[in-house]
Length: 348
Image 1: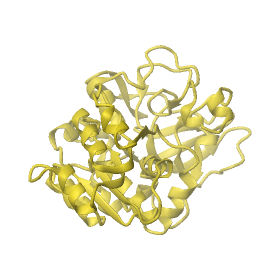
Image 2: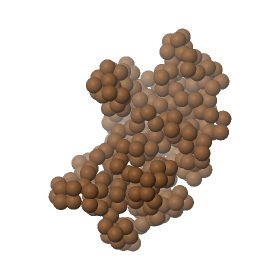
Image 3: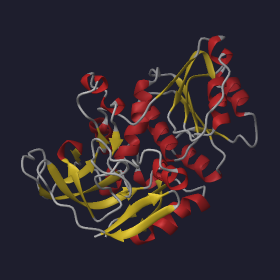
C-alpha cells in the first residue's frame, strides 16, 4: 500500500509498504481523510521532535515512520479480543500512546505519560496511508451525523477543547487567541462552546483573520495597530485568558501583556526556540502562565459538539488533496501558502 514516511528533516517519501494486519488487540482501518498537523510540519522542517530515532518504548518502532495522526476511516477488520468496534463502523483515532504504569497514568493524566508518544509520529503506522492497524483503545466511533471529514478534525479539536478546559476561563469571561491557524481557529470554537462572552483574535494573515471573523471572533490586525494596547483598551484592562497558538517567541510576551490583573496565559503551541519573558510581567500583576500538551478524556465531548454544529469542516478546511499530492501540495504547499488553514488528505 502507499504510505508517507518520514526519513529525516525535509525528507518525506511516498513509498510502497506492507499493508498492516489486525493483530490481537488492534483494529484495521481503511483511512478516509487525514489532516496535516502543525506538528507534522515541524517534523518536516526541523525534526526529529516527537519522532523516535531510537526504538520507542511503547510503539516498538523508530524512524523511518509513517506520518499522520489526525485521521478518520472505516473499520475493515478487528483483531482477537477487540469488542468495542466491528467491521463497518465509522471511526476516528485518539492517537496517544501511554504506558498505564507511570505516576501520570495512574492519576489519569495519560497525555503526560513518561513514555508518551503519538501514533503517526512515534511509529506503529499512521494516517497518511491507505490502511492503519490501530490499538483498539485508541478507537472512537463516529455517529452518522458526523462526517469522515469532521472525523479527521476530532484530534486537533481535542487539543483546543483541552486547552480551554484546563484554563481558568469561566462562562462570560473574555478571551484572546494569538494566532488563528488550524488550532487557533479551533480554540475559538472551543471558547464559543464554553461560553466566552468576547473572543479577540490576533492574526497577521488576511485570510486567517477572515476565517476567525466567520467563526465569530473580534479580529485584530497587528500590522495596523498595537494588538496588546487595542485589547487592553477594548476590555478595560485585558482579557481573562489569552491563548498563545503561534509558537513565535515574541508573541508569548504579547499574550501575557494582553491579560488583566490575575489573568492567565495558556500556551497551546509547540515552540522550536526558547521564548524569553520577564518574570515581573507575571509577578507584578499576579498573572498565571500555564500550558497543555495534547488532550485527555475529551474525544467524546468533541464528537458530541460536532454533532451540534461546532468545529465545522466547511469553515476550517481550505484545501483537499490526494495522498499522491501530499508532499508537494501538502507540506510544501503549507510552506508556500501561509494563508492555508487546514489541509485534508484523501487516502486512496
